[in-house]
Length: 459
Image (cartoon, rainbow, N blue to C red; front, side):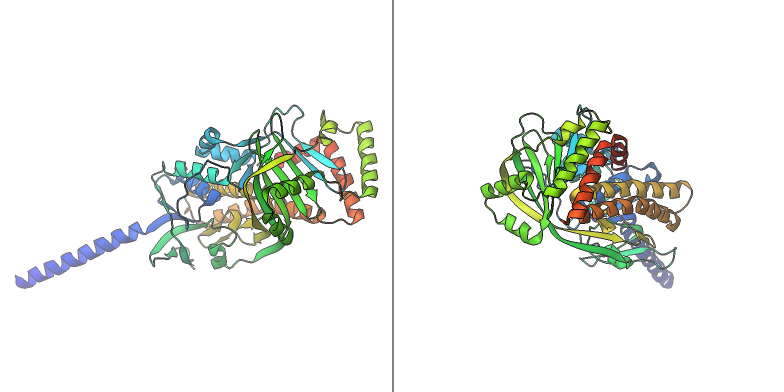
């Protein structure tokens, strides 16, 4: 009997150990782990958490920083120009209602012009009847997504949690292992990297990463402008040293994004507020960079187009001559961040996938960075749900490849166009300046072509 009692106790001990081990294993395993928060990471977690195809899946988002508290006493210096596709995504996630109740700037028109000539292009309806973009602070977008994430039970968010290592599986039946800074280890069927342009997951995947340093910084600030009525126009002027843009926040304030070389950027950061304001107005209004030969040819081309009535957009001729508002003062201080181009040759590996800046990084001159990232969110969610609905694993490489193909066909042309614009407007060589000035005037005269490009940029 004593022997039986000993065996019984031993058996119970083994059973309890197995039960505890099994419970611990389940608690450290997630069906999907998203590494990195930010706007794209939080949107990915929301989208997956709201997908019916993943109703019973455990999803974890790992964010290395503290949980941010939104401050509304002043405008955040980092803003995004959301296109209609991004706005629709945020609406579907419930985040846009929070933004709408808080604050955002509507863009009904965009005017882009060359500092070396009077060539310009205007986007938007002449009667300003439709919004073409929405200017929203990055922190507000993220906070709105966080509010919605708090409502989704199957999505867990861990803040102040840093990943130190990823171990990707070699076989389809193995799991991804994620090691955290505290030494704990998590496993998952699919790891999604939304950890920015210095992505640790991308480095683990060891894909070729094509990068280009623009040797530029974007100087950002919040500006009070002189606009008397509605402030609904986004202004962008291409200077030889880089583009300067004013993005409307409300009728009184606009956000500055001034891309320039690092030496100039650092000098701008050191300027007192009144001198900095003067420099902005000079950059927007000064004609010292005008090329007389180019100006003469550009003006003749413009008049020819006007006479021939090639331009079918009513009122656009007068729009070209519209001038930007004066900057009255800077609110708060200016800041800057570095600019670069980057693209991962592979967005995917075994049970691993990259989204947002982890996969691609672009110059802000066209405002497409976060819009491309939100496009990744939509496409990856669709690929995962298609896999599940067809009976495959949600980390199936077949469907991840479809995501990669879909997004690279979309992202690469946009990135190439933005990079091409940067190179084209970064020169003062007269033949190229003349060519781009003529091209810009002709492009502005073709309303159907402009509509096509506007539609392409909206999804």
